[in-house]
Length: 252
Image 1 (cartoon, rainbow, N blue to C red):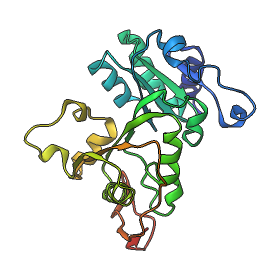
Image 2 (image 1 turned 180 degrees about the vertical axis):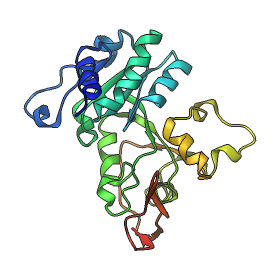
Image 3 (image 1 turned 180 degrees about the horizontal axis):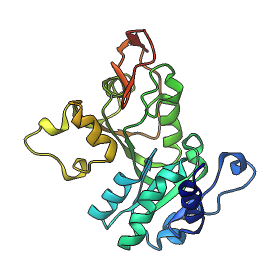
Image 4 (image 1 turned 60 degrees about the vertical axis):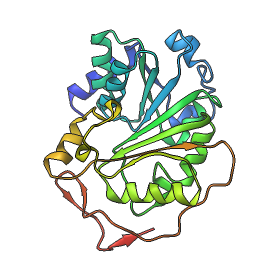
């Protein structure tokens, strides 16, 4: 591990806009701000929006700049990446943005029922082999229900046609109200300001000629959630400069 990464970890421990709480202690240690993010962290009662798998935090910070009347929290386990957004937010004096370093799988450990108004998923790994790891699977949606306000909104912005198509089927089979569904954001005559934030990795996809997709939907608090029973064509690539891992052509 290089000195640069070690220094970033040290910085994160001291940053006032960063909270670290790891999987290994989550069950044994109650999270003190659960239900109190507005009062204790942001010192206001504005709506709370979280970005899961925020990476460098570019989208979280970008949203905070554009919407000062909302509070934003980027969530990721990789602190060295998150350091970039946390540092930028501090330098700009943004008081409506924070970062939580933890595992997404236990997200409902950190927020009380109804505490979150919206969830953003930006360029998540499509997890084409295992649906239980997909961030729009029925399993994760159940977790989101535990923290979202009634009819809270889930946003997915991605490069993956597999993930986009899978999520569309999830909304269809569960009759989730879709607010917007765009197969190619930048082919639109006009683009909603909320979608104009470009991250480092998004620009890489665009440079490769890959279209950026977006779907948002409401998540009702009640009703059974099921998985779509469909075969979906796999993406022809895995990530930047890496070919797909499987010889299969489709997956559920």
